[in-house]
Length: 143
Image (cartoon, rainbow, N blue to C red):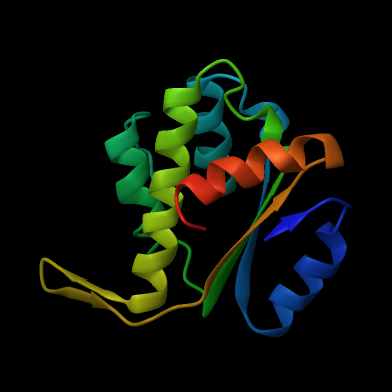
């Protein structure tokens, strides 16, 4: 869901009601790939073995056993500022998040460690001017 106002407080309160982990990512701190990985490492409390690359990001965002909750709510503010000079990495980021949401919602069984279906919500916050661009990217991935 794309939001164009500050919804931080409401999302955080609603998340707490359901014992969901609320994570706020500031896209303004994700200008480069290294900054993006650092922001997610800090906010999702990724383990020290996180490798600061796409496969490690994909693995960690789909695990989260160190961050137990009944569900997850992720608010990414300033989404249009994420990797503004790197369309290919931005597309990779979106693809990983699409797969992540699907895996959490459906549940998984990797290497004999099943994960039951778990709510996982992603909210993207941007200004009106960026909304069209973001919607085009999401539509490209059938979202």
